[in-house]
Image 1: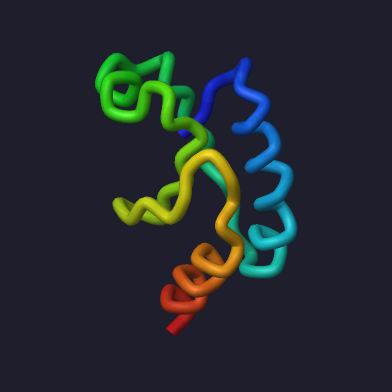
Image 2: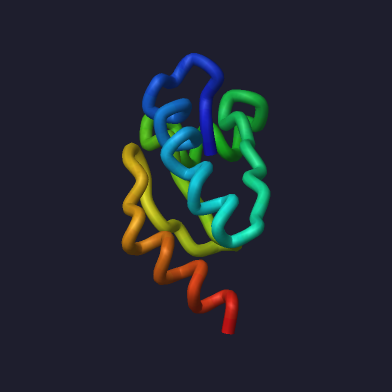
Length: 75
């Protein structure tokens, strides 16, 4: 979950790139401001990184947690 004008969102996207490459994944960025339901749910908590329905982190990339979650998906 992201916002176009959010510097933390842009920072998280950049920090996530090496993990995406390592695990061969693509990132789907959803703009919370484009969907009233998402805006109501996440509002000022962006960026939020989800893997499916599991919230992995918000505001800043939690690399160990993301790595662990992606590792579980490989199995």
